[in-house]
Length: 411
Ligand code: GLY
Image 1 (spheres, rainbow, N blue to C red):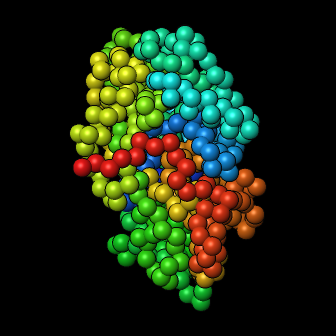
Image 2 (cartoon, helix red, strand yellow):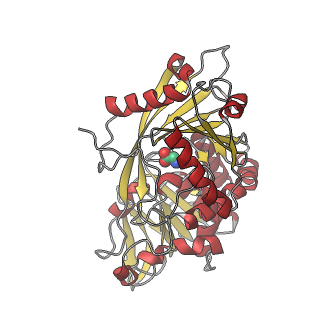
Image 3 (spheres, rainbow, N blue to C red):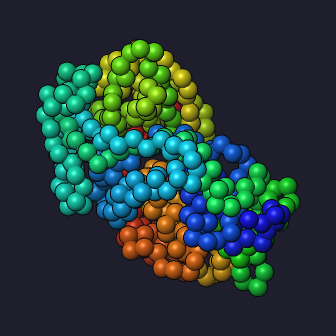
């Protein structure tokens, strides 16, 4: 482990969310000396807010098949990933293998779930259609009028805050150095990366730099104009609800619902917390918690699980998901004209938690000069290098606009 935080390091990672932490940890496990530059020990932006659904089957969307394949591969990596993190950290990572129930509020919602069945089976994702009665057998506190649903036994969840804390400990145990500062500027010379300068002026030497700062990634300076693909913030508002002591939780597994076309989800934790999310709003860097956003979440959740109204509100959160031009992640080296050694691990949009293990594997491979794993290839960051961008975004990766909604303009 280097004695001085200025390095030199093999790789410096800008960003201390799940993606940055997992990248630094995995690369350290593979023998690289890594540093993470992040202003706070608490994951901010998206990782500290996310609900932690690992649900490629129940989040499958037409037009995002490549993304769902990567998501399924990452979901299937979770048990071994968590075991390795926990072994290094000596602390639990908050993984919960209880499956997911997707339910429909009305017949249109049910028809929409049925349409997705074809896609789920084409992608080989386990998702069994079940009746309203069977839904209530799995989750007795569902409203009696729900129309039916889909049971995805392999779609699980993780607590992103616990996972981030465990990853930080695991990375520290593997020699990763943490620098509590904001990444300000990539240092370059002779067409190659030489390190990273922080906001307070510290310089960390490295010939590989990974930009993993979520929706703020493209703010990091020092690079020629236009080299970084644009990342747009996608606001999400959500609530953390507390089950009163001695009472049964209103749901025991992740419940994703469609209520008149609008998605809502409830993700339970072992300690009785229920995360209720989330809005999806394209409003720049607005992080205001709004009455309208919270009202719609509670209204729709109450339609599906009336007992939600009895829970205590423990916390209301707003996060910014980092959306790439085609909604797929940007992984690995950018390639010319970007300086050699510049890597991205960004743009994970709605799927940062799900894609954490696959991203860590892909980034460690890229940092060691290996090819990306096959399922990650469509998400090579180089697809948005200025030369490759001429024919427009979305080539074969996530495909733009493919998400399940709750978009709205607030007045
Ligand atoms: N993956 C859930 C969300 O972004 O709201």
